[in-house]
Length: 251
Image (cartoon, rainbow, N blue to C red; front, side, top):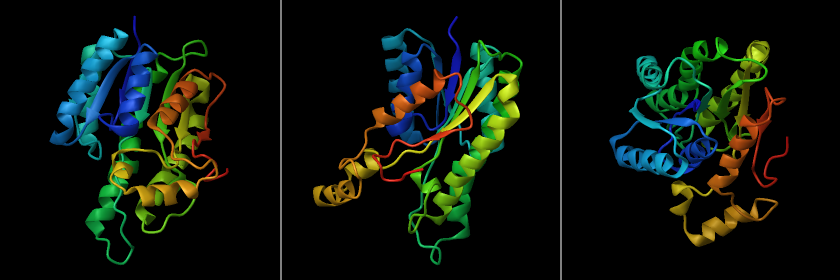
């Protein structure tokens, strides 16, 4: 019987790559999206995962910055796949890219609610479906998407960096709290990764960005999916932050 994994913000970019990795590893995959523009992407992704990896999928629209939407997402998962959730990938995230004088209260609250509060909501709701089923031989996993912005400061990204640093603190605290109960909690802190946002940058700007990275190139979403695959299959790894970033930030 296949195990079940939930991924928030799973319709595109890093989320899409990680959802595909979950399917490759044999999990039934629950893909969460928020905006209507992501519905077709999510449906197509779910169809691709089911066809390629012979697992079941579920697509759920939910604004995970809201606790009640998170409840609905978890309830729909349990209704379809049963009361064991083996993996939670907290990946939903947004950014403002705004200086701290001109930014509005609504803007930075939206970032904190989406990038950090959703992680608290989802782990609070999913953990009861993990701790009653976990053991050393059959561990459950929570993997949180942070960022190099959570490891170092970034200009015009104060709210984003605060949220991503908070994710790291959450990861470490939960890892200690639930290590003895068969649940591992880790984080991935991606560096510069080629997603839709960077594809809109002109070639000169891309080359300038790549020049700031010691390895000399911008990473691919597959680098993050590979990190997820490693964390899910590394039974002695918990409370850690791994950062595929080409040497841009050294921990």
